[in-house]
Length: 258
Image (cartoon, rainbow, N blue to C red; front, side, top):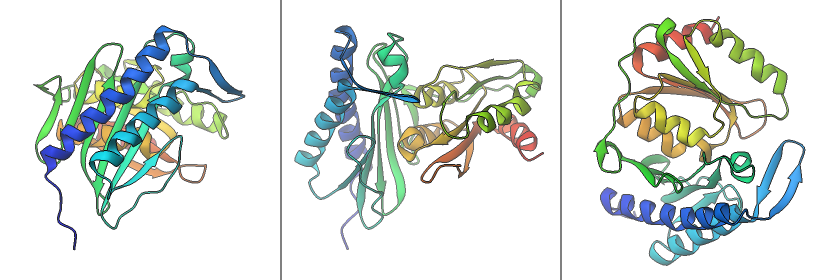
């Protein structure tokens, strides 16, 4: 059986891959990258293709034995050994509209279990990372979820994806919005999860996410003391996501289960 790789070495590789992808995004954002295709519910830019290409080329050079699953070039989660799960540009609509709230992310799975995850914001130059059992960090500083206990005091980030099941998506959010102190719609799952892990909000709910949207963020969140759960989404291959600090997560779950 192939030997499990060193987790800290994997973490450094994940950071490097995200920096390489992030540099493509930074340059594309600065030059107002051309739009490749415009669809009713999504926008794809050249920059995300360039970002994933840079990440894949690096990973294939340093870890040629690993499988890769990425948003742009596809692939599936390989549970036989090592597998990278990449989102080369999360927050695409923000990106093409000039909103500096987007990120690149990489997660490493070993035999189906996530070992390491990185989220990199190339505009703010913030890097968030976690390795299994090692804690979560932002630019080297340890991260921790908030201490908020009451739902009435909680700020919750919610997703704002628009696609099949759009109305059901928003009706699900209505259950929560009426019970909390404030809600934010920032539309980048990876950075919303980083904000939750760092204690800058208290909960996060989204519908219809893909694995690459939350793989790294879910590990960062749990290593920062948070909790989450997923359930199958409406569309095949998607997940509904609920996360929070422990007391807020439990309260949000009660509402969701009503």
